[in-house]
Length: 369
Ligand SMILES: Cc1ncc(COP(=O)(O)O)c(C=O)c1O
Image (cartoon, rainbow, N blue to C red):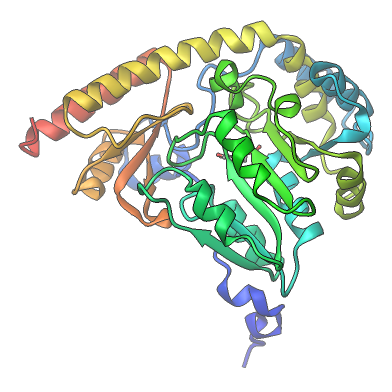
């Protein structure tokens, strides 16, 4: 008899399910026998990173026999200038995902609660469970948008961390800064509030300088180089937070959590902000185009503020399989209890042409159009 390793693991391992990422292109090619495929499943930037970031990566490759700077000094300095904060108010991580996990692990354990929206980014629930904390999933009143009143009402003495994604993935919903501030005003001072702004660049004018604009002693804003900056494969994210919170989180961080090429690429990408924002503008135009088409076909699942759109259809699984058969990979949202929905990342103009053509034919066949 082999050892039952799940029984040997910490108790919270029982209820944990690994994160299900978007299907990789290679897997679809194998499964469907198609010659090529486009991945619209992980909200990446289809245009890729700034050429300056690619150049920095090339240079960094020659240095990979060295450990990276464990303090991420030069990236933090750049970020500090960019955000007009002190370097001690920044934590960098292997994607913002790691930063979120570290924050939850540092502040919530068995007997503590972590409050988040039921259809909020799924990593909050996974990280809370992994930390042995109690995850409190607050239902959305309209099925999509964080119910901030209900979330504030769910906070009690056991609550150590509250997570909000603004805009949220996968629902694409967003709250205005005034609504977020009203929510923050209702929370106890000693609660850590993770305001996840992974899609910030797509709504920068609407949110403004959230770090300066919003007020709460436990406010932590997380951002990433994975979306607008086009560096998802490098894995770099960061938090802006009070120095005291950064100091605690750094105790949990592994010594070299962001690798050397990734840091070089992120620094260079930050220098080319204009290039990034030009791609963001194109992505937003393309998102509007996709949403117009989905709306005309009666399958728009709601307006998205991120670099993705929502399709809603009773036969979403058939649509998923039909798209995959044509080499197009959307993201099913069953893990969020959204069985009728597919989340589709905004691709390049050519990728979106192909998506719309395929979708039109599939819906016409289905008798929808
Ligand atoms: C809302 C949200 N937060 C955080 C992340 C994590 O991104 P990363 O770890 O690549 O920075 C994602 C990625 O999809 C996301 O959608």
